[in-house]
Length: 571
Image (cartoon, rainbow, N blue to C red):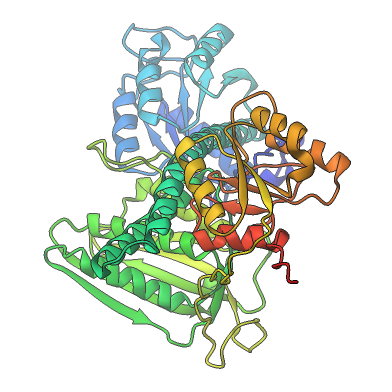
């Protein structure tokens, strides 16, 4: 048999990872292996086999009993466990290596020790070694072991291949499970967001109607406070959708220092006892091209974690800098951008993150909170936001010396090439769209409006009528189609929610209308953040799509792009 000299030469498991999330991969560096074997002689033989085959690919620690293994797993980082079932692991160090599988009823050969070891290892893959008893190996697989090898068949390459493949299979399986969990969360979040955004749309619409009718300054102030809270609610639903990737991704050129300063100011307003907030910002950092709401969400999550890591007070530091050193370069799907990276960091002076948890800290649904308040979604969302914006999230920490979480984002030089950028390299905030003033028109245009929420339907009807349009309202596409068949020649536009009850879908209704009137204008509305995939329609906000909850001016401006009111007839 040919001796293989590198793990790269082993036949490896092929990955098939098509869920849209980063493919699982093994961290760089040697694999940390915990070898559980009562016999020091056998343990030395197995260790030598691995070292002769791939000296630099494994770091092996030997223990003689299940109790020692459980203790080691509790305090050390381990990536693989391999255990010898050919004799009981009673820890006396007198194994004779005969591999006969005799058991004393209290050790690994009775599989009770294996069960305890699997529970302690949790998600760490375990490979078992047996004597000539294949049945014992198969029973170990049924309990949760990843693979088994018979002593007589063990060679260096085969042992190494079994360990690495076991680890890759576990990583791949966990990756797929995480993706399925995220998809489930995304579907749930989309449904919740739809209902919440409908409520917000009704509140926002009613408040906007009242703005023009309120007579006192105090009432107008209270109404505008309501509108401000609606906008905050919309931000909450967008944050909820981020993890499931059901939100609208809206990147803009953003000053990272301005976002970091806003988060630092928010933390100061929390008035946490004995908390000091410090800033170390490089004023020369370039712009970043990101979704600002997502960046704010990520930084706020990191800030909350930092404050929670210091229950007795401490210092939280907000830092920005340019990534110019070699160690700052990261690998992303697009490689290293030509302008480098901007690093936004949040540091605390807490106890830091234990070594045993660092590989899992960004794993979805993993939480270190034991009071059932942690969802395990915070840091995984932070990492997902960084990846979506072309960067990376990473952790640096030392025991008892606090932790620093960094977001690395592609930098964009402020050379004036960005449209709308001022001479000092800042991007002015976009002014809210204003509804063009329209005088009452003697000739109205008619809109067929579909909305399944009665409150939202009433508000939208009133807003459109207030702008000068005639409205035919329907609670479903089935109802609206009946109106169309009776009055289609008098209808000038369709405005419809994307999710309504009934057999006829609004997209199908629009397709039917376009079959006879190809240029007929249609505007879609939804609280799902345009997460629909349609080969028929491309949703463009402000053109044929309005995101709930919307401002009065946004709805009217979008409708007005396609359906301006007819000019007054003069004689």
